[in-house]
Structure formats: structure tokens, C-alpha cells
Length: 193
Image (cartoon, rainbow, N blue to C red; front, top):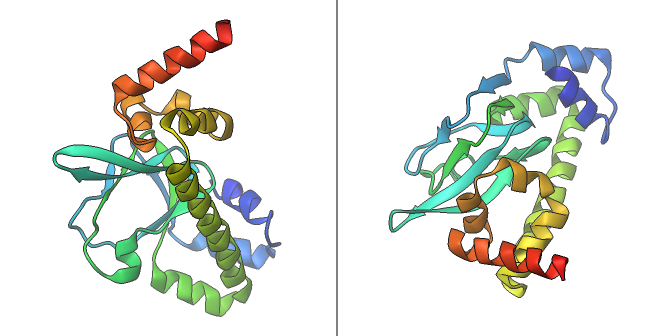
């Protein structure tokens, strides 16, 4: 498990053997079963997650209907808003697949930053990349049709089409499952013609 994390980190910074030992000594690695809810609306949490293997989904329940807002897969992290703003969560986090994650909290991160300042740089770089991706995703959602969003998903995240239930994909692009079926049929028909 830790080798997956070390490999990812090495894309940004190099780790000494001592730093690897410290990371390994922390009790941060967890195996989580499919359908495990990590966070519910109304709960408080201090945990941030980094997916080494698997898939985590964020969603809201609005008028009794789940509204998926994101999927986090290998080498993606999520720190729920409630960790930062100390308020109750407004959404849910659940595992779509059996997953291996790291679990951290602000106190642990602060201690690591003090001992190893380059981890703070690493987190800043990753946070900036994540913010940029979220902005682009939001812009795309606002400026494209559902069909264009689905085509973009096929191009940029083809793994999700195989890994995630159809109704959750439809929710992610802002439509009903029936509409997604029609879009898929239309795309398939255009490919055949």
C-alpha cells in the first residue's frame, strides 16, 4: 500500500528513507469495503481521504433523490468541507468499490509539515491542481450540453463508465438515467452511420 503512495509522491518531491519510515509508521492506511458510507449529511468529521485504490463518491440527497457531484479514484484526495469549516457535512461520501485509502486529519498534517516542510509544499501543489480541475469541471458543466458532458467523460474518465452505476453517471452529468440511455443510443447510432 505504502509503495503506491510513495510512487505518487515521487512525481512531486523525493522522499528520504527517514521520511518514508515516518509515513509508514503513521496509522493512515485503511481498507474499506464497497458501499461503506464514510460520511453522512449532518455528521462532523476530521478525516481527509486519499484514494490509493478504488472509488469514492460524493453526493447530496435533495428531495429524496441522490445528486452525485464527484468521483474520486486512484491518486485523488478529498477533504470534506466539514473538516475545514468545522460545521456538519452537507453531503455524503461513500465507497463505490472496495477501496484502499489513507486517512489523515489536520493535526496529523500540521505535525508532518513541522517535521518535514516539503510535505506542505506537496500538499499545496496537489491542492492547486485539484482547485484548477474543479474550476474546469464547473466551467464545463455550465457551458456544455449533457451529451457533450458525457462525451467528455468518455474521453477524460473512461474508467468511470465501466466502474460506476449508470444512474450515478447520469446524476453526475445532471440528467436522469433515461436521458443518458437516449444519449448513448444516439452516440452509438452516429458511430454506425
